[in-house]
Length: 510
Ligand code: FE
Ligand code: CA
Image (cartoon, rainbow, N blue to C red; front, side):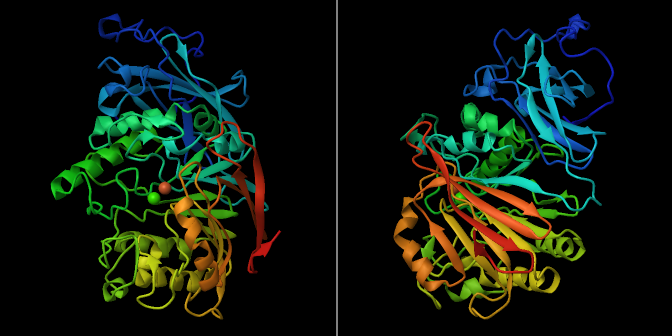
């Protein structure tokens, strides 16, 4: 199934349209008695003239096949300039078939830059909710303001998605997800996820669907387009490339290849991702999203092409000689070259690396071997220095790194050389905390990180939440919106700390 490209307005409005199959009775798929839009709708990867729309038909979300008959369906969609859908500017119909879990991916084009749109889907007599999206500004547009949310790490069992309710009410233009959209294992904590560990395609689909039933997550998707990348748990904790984690349920290399293919496929099926579905264990997710002249988001993949971490079997430990081998990779040679080109050719006010694992040095014990989290860029100091050298050469004053993974809030100066506190500051790294995933493991090391890393300006592992970023040509502001307690439904959310980075300047607490 190729994503359908949006056509200009033609044909009847969704409410007047014939039920699916009415005009081609011989091939009509069976009607769907129950609401198939249980997973909500979503949009993503905005362009200045278009956006991706997504939904998936799944009357019974966590059952194999989503409770859908095996037949292909056609899903009608429309895009309007108003929230009541009275001024429709694009409409069409897109396929939803069992081979793609009845997911719908629509690559709508022909929209105007820098404005909101509303959209919905219809199949048979069922209408989806109406959701809001927006297009990016035109490439030449200047003097812009962008409000966006940074989110990530949403283990279902660990708590309620109160942070998403807060984000949905904040009227942002964009949401950036840094990965761990699902966790491959279930359990019973604040909430129950009774599904078995995800290994097969159906198991990954069912888990994505369980997460997607959350009303707050659906509301966050319905408020703005998302730009997203994955981390490890979309496949398996701490995997690197084609190497499973130590103690994996799929230690056999061939089994892990099949598992990665299943995880990537299910991710594609559940995200408003542009481009065709993957047919094997590879899927390109690194890409550039431009926001006028204001910001170029270079969305990175630090999992798929990474070389194995060989300094020990734990995340946390000393760096061995192998970590400093120039052959080690976090991005892989091709993505690294793509990044270098992107940084060199970007004319935006801000270069934004939207990625997964902590970029700044976090020495728990400094020196070498020292003690570091080897699953972060700290485990790959040679690869990190190559990126820093690119930034120092091409974007020395205006880079922001956005990060997830560790379930704690950090604000750090981005340094040209982490071992030299006097080296140039290239920008900042904002590590968002988790939407829900537990961060208590980091509490014990926060004092060590603050004591041993002068570039780390703020650290807080106590609370979950999201980060509201307000980007202007000469100033980047980050407000950490933290939830009192994710084990209590509807707990209060407040701004715990705010930071301002003047372009070309130094981070200041606001
Ligand atoms: Fe996580
Ligand atoms: Ca992770």
